[in-house]
Length: 272
Image (cartoon, rainbow, N blue to C red; front, side):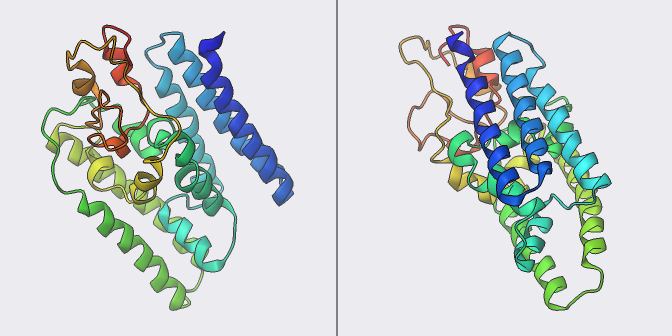
């Protein structure tokens, strides 16, 4: 049973967050929300330990569709970065601000960029494309993500300081249009660079929050040097070009790891 410690620990963490927010905000929605997400991720980790090849996809679909369809389209909450900026400007600690605090600002100190691997509704679609492992060298165009990050901030700031009418409707439309644009750009880049995760590497503005925090993440992929035979299969399988054989925090693309465990699947010696 010791090997199931990680799923159990993940469930406990999410339940602590769920109960804390439920009591702090006096709103049972947070109890349901974070319990559901925690159970979905726990299920995926359990299936992975049972050697199920679709384990991570289970969490992606369960969490991704919940956040995109239910929270975004039905509840009309902008869960994109524009929604975070909007609530931040209005000084409201609800919805997107809580989501970002847990999943993308403080959460990565514990589980790194696990959000990108198990919960992102953009990656949920992109990971169904044919280039699961990159076929071409990584490009030096990561600056685009910072441009998109700044553009999203300026867009919301302009609407806010201009006292735009019906900001809630603007935010909902921004959510719909933004998601369509992300999917279009993500799919286009995937085929252009033969890399499903090209959007994550070069364009996604959320990584501006995730990368610095994930550097200090407690949960990290580690390689057992005694078992490793330096076959290089883990590096070829990694969708984010991470050198998982390097134990240091300064390893190549170290803050890009999405805990997908593709390297562990590819390792012939169970060294990862």
